[in-house]
Length: 588
Image (cartoon, rainbow, N blue to C red):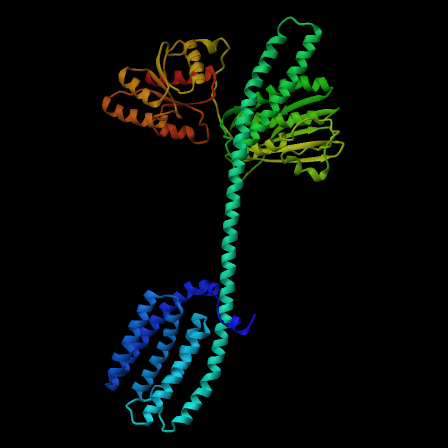
């Protein structure tokens, strides 16, 4: 790179610095305004107005015009440099040397470092030298111009040049150095912005690709699972028919393979939903011991077939009812127990549930679930990696345990969705222990003891006219069968708008109202009908029937004007209890 290439800025460098120099132009205009006011002040004292009017005002006006028309450009900053020297000369002249404005010239040259362009300083220096040369010589000829306070013109001029030149050179060097530093800073900022933009674009593309992949995987899993369920159902029906021993053996093998493939597809579907953030929880009062008894029955046969001892213990201090998602809690236990049985060739598998003390959150109960086994275990270094998807203890081509390696990954995701923690420990060859800690809220449920036959008897209010607003055909069928068994007459509508029309056309003893519906949702129907009742003078009991069972949902619906709340899924006994309560409150 040549000397001139180093000191002359390129178009790229000027482009980097132009916004900064445009701001510097504004600073210079304000400085020119200040200097103009100073010159007018001195002119008023000296009673000599023509320099301030004919020189300072046009200089100020032209600097403002250049700021508006050519901000950040070379011609503008060259003019600003010369303008500074104009004010210096006018002050020297007006004060007849009383104001030593040469010192201000040094300061003004320093101010020009804002531009980070040595040419601005150079042109200002040449301008002030020429002004001193022409004006000072004219002063010696008797012209009414004051530049120097002595008649020794040439000596004074040479001294000024000699003294000012090194200072100007130093300022010029600093401007070159500052320009390089400023350009480098702008390049770093620009590179950082480009890198951040590229990262955002890459992240967005990755998220889109991951979402599309998950959606595709979920759709394909669903499409495959549907006919596979049909295959499994037909095999189950065939097994109930008279068969030879060989035929039954063939069908048993097919049924096991079908069940394994269905379980695998279910895992893939759950995993894809979790990746897409589409897996929703449904919290409702849950009986832990019922889940334990159900799982005990599920795995007893499997453990017996492998010659294993399977034990499940639930401490007495575990609450009878807790608020959680029973489906996902059951899935967590199911995965952990299945995993333990799969990797335990002999010995035992033990499950224990107890409560941990926690003084930090008195409103919550910490459930500690431990699944221990005497199986093959895993290396200490895999205590964390076994929760990664598609990871197995033995991933070699000679492995004896089947599976895609999704069970533990799904289990950890479910535990985290339930705001819990899971950890694993093991001694290779001696077994493993999986420990889950889940925070749950203890709830009190008053369930009157009924025999199975009691559940089928009619409600306290028999033969009620009940309007059911429910858009799901399966839920409509379930409610129709339940309400018919309880002796009630039910009218079904598929959306909120139809519910409003039916309520307005005929009286009903009770409204079972779904929340998520087309046209008008349940909350909108509730609000509109309650407003209508304020003028009609009567009130229809309304029970919100919904899958919204998170903490606080019941209170939200009751505050909105509902009389009751029924969370899906529900039993016939619970439906009967809710209807009886509404009838009792209306007719005590």
